[in-house]
Image (tube, rainbow over all chains, first blue to last red; front, side):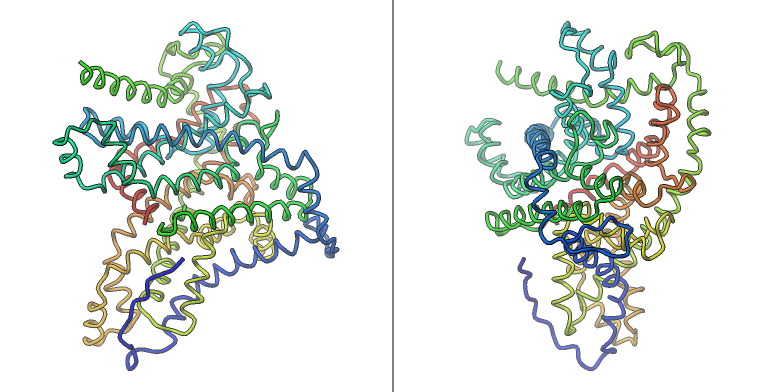
Length: 300
Length: 273
């Protein structure tokens, strides 16, 4: 990322030369200890068979990486990510639709805005329980299906391997749609209002306004959301961990990494998995920078 | 005619989306007022027979929620204050000074944003453990402070808009750098500080992963981990779990209703700047 170079007047003659270092000491110390040391160690652990406790770590070369790519039970977590990736498209489409609707005058605009955004603020564990209750047998979803006459569709939503990931991914749409929605809304509001007025004078309808003003106007943030959707769907943890603990084929990459490291004491293997995940995220970020070079970085 | 049906379609979709958003929460509210037998016999949409708070009392006392709130509040205050101090100091140094290692430091902070915290957790755990912080509140606080580069970034972005002439005028009046930082920079950074308080506060209150991994001790439960523990003892008692869920949600709802406008602004400026 290139930062603009701002020429500054020389500051010689005032202040002590060590001042910036004094202000930076704590932040840089924390940065090194909690980001760079772990990253470096992770690369080193990934080449060993360390169990997390042993004093000695024996070097095993690329064995752990070979395991990650050749053992199907380790690799299948990527397949689970596809559900969340697909769900994030649904999420973005909904967010875009509602952001467009609520950018124009609408009754109870703030109430709708508030309701759609609120789930994002709710504690993840609370959401896990809310949806365990929602999906349980004879729970909310089954009752809802009965009301609309689709009762025969009922099934064990979290117990059936065919649907468990769909249930969990829908939960994540419920949770995160509001955030996307608010970000899109903010972007749409930064488009100058006169553009719509001009378009309306030219006889453009809502769809044409969306197609030719809104969509190009917020293209950067849409592009960014797509990229975040990819890395986000690889890093899914909370919802499946809280709701199913990764059972019935709902295990994700992060759940697997955490259980390899902390439950099965395979720190070496877990580190190799983490390195692979990091590499994928870096490649995606690099692609983003190449395709959308003027983008500002999103840091969430 | 089409304009009319478009209007109807718009409101129908909004109402439907709101209903789907609220329904899962509403049924939990109803469940939290039911007795165990009532819950077994009635459907999720049946109203509770009374508004007894018994489940809330049980959830609050047996679920050790008071302790959880105390722990969360303590961690929240220390982490948010620390984030602000660390972030503004870093921003001040990076934006207002020329020094030899400046490029290196800026690049180091930028590169760090590319590393998702979940990927390095296995190795971070060893660092925290070797510092002797495992199973202490310190572990969580130090991680909230040390891995939050987003806030530093928000402060740097905002610093750029504060004119440097103000610092220079203060220097002429004989102020030193610490005085400038405290008397000029901090007050002018208020909008950015408000954004960070909101984003960070919500993140800390809701964080599950870090306390779950680093503070497994029962006495050190925060809101998330204490609620997660309901899974064991109250496994089949949905009315108690429901009450616990609502207890955890109430502060969020209150803060949201009070600060709605600022929260939206915080998220849009925090994420897109």
